[in-house]
Image (cartoon, rainbow, N blue to C red):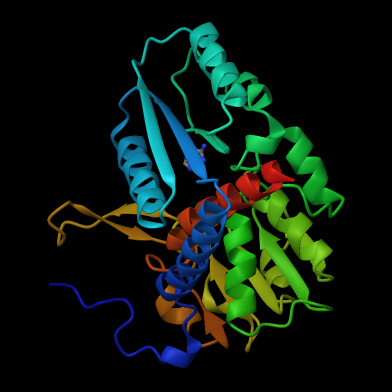
Length: 299
Ligand code: GUN
């Protein structure tokens, strides 16, 4: 049995995504009760096209989390060869269904389906993934009615929960993906951080990351961030989920983040682990977005 990555880590240093997600989900469950008392049960419909094993697991956990929070959680499973037109017709139906407050089409879809066409078809008011360009725009201009993608929204809650002062901080976002890096930048700017986005083409990357009071690692490379890339006392949030071969494990692999945790934990003032960091926050934020979609639909 390999040692737990968290063995011997000062608990005060850890940003515990499992515990924070639990608090978010408890708050969501209370909001669900309040909405039910007003005659509305928030409902999320997840659409899965095909039977990709990882997507199947994700979708099942989203449905389970909805049910646990007292919401309606429905999964529609479609065969892998479903024509794009049929998927778009289903989205139209869900857009028009008043019992469905959130719609999530699990990405990536099979190759013959254009993900952007799918995202554009979902009504922005039901786009609890925050992927629709209208929501991207709403988040960028700081409009409260917009939905932020769940992963960066979860990071913001983790920073707050860790007592990290974002206002005026130098935040560095490592990675510029549409799902994490770019929306993370929006949220940090709107919270009055000074934000630098860097990526694989950035010159002297370590010099940039060493300037960070808050470092968000979302570059998708296993244990990429080493101790000498981190300023002493920085707050480090690891968004990475990478599989690395590990013959000592029954599965033959283990999951590591984008941060070399064992070394960086000695430099950072606070750090989120992988697993048990950002991962659990994502579903919690999806539930939160769905409850908000239901509440906004009542106005
Ligand atoms: N596939 C992996 N993560 C996600 C997510 O957050 N939303 C959707 N729609 N698909 C995903």
